[in-house]
Amino acid sequence: MRPKRPLVSPEDQALFLEAIGGATPLSGRDRVPVVKPPAVARVVELPPQVSLTVEGDGQRYAARGPGVSRIQVQELRAGKVHVEQTLDLHGEVVDKGLTRLRTFLLEATRLGHRCVLVVHGKGLHSEHGAPLREAVLGELLGPLSGFIHALSTAAPADGGEGATYVMLRGTR
Image (cartoon, rainbow, N blue to C red; front, side, top):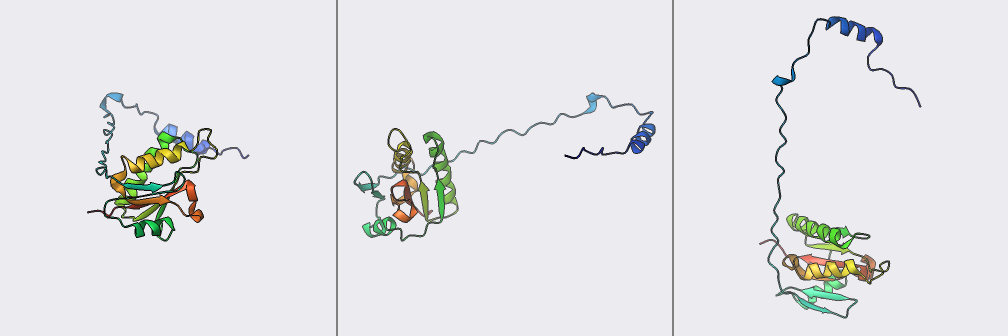
């Protein structure tokens, strides 16, 4: 490793010190303290909860909002809907994963995305089943249901039981 070169040559430093020889430092009293701007708390309001119709056998599931046809859910379940964005929560603890899910859905809705994929895993490496998967589903069917047009277990090519397609409601 090369030693660092001095930024100023010794000759230049001597000239500088000679030039400022008679100067006196300013007192600290005339300096204005820098005031940090207050932190801005961003309050985000979630849409009101919606009652979703849920179908499933414990492993594969689907849910749809009022007015959503079964045909739309079948297309979603078959993976025929284009996924515009993916959130991968593998390895997350439940609390952090749910916070990321909420932020992700808010942003996807703001961007006008229609269908997203949430990868939560199957819980194969967890001692107690699939806590993240269950928490994500609970959040989607509960507090975040206002975002949901329909949802379904992903097709095997997109993660199967370890992922969920979420079709978002359009903005009104």
